[in-house]
Amino acid sequence: MYCPNCGNEVSEKAVICVKCGVALKGENSLVGTDGKDWLTTLLLCIFLGYLGIHRFYTKNTGIGVVQLLTLGCCGIWTLIDFIMILTGSYTDGDGKQLVKK
Ligand SMILES: [Zn+2]
Image (tube, rainbow, N blue to C red):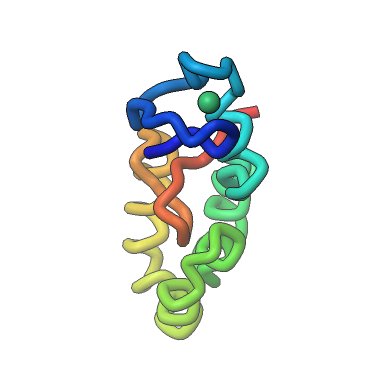
């Protein structure tokens, strides 16, 4: 990728540009949105998971509708999501991991 400030080519993993010193990760976080809150998603999954509400919250709307219609596949799907949230492998609709605040 390239530095948005000076155009110098920098590593994908670079935190700051070595040429001009601008914070690259800061630039990215302004553009993209933060991941959804981990605890909120977990609580929604526990209490309203059979309605797929945690899926709507995390922008997985398509899956949320299916879970709503099938009641979380009789709770099995909800249980799988609950375990995924606990283990940190659950991602939101943008493919981002949940954020523990
Ligand atoms: Zn730069």
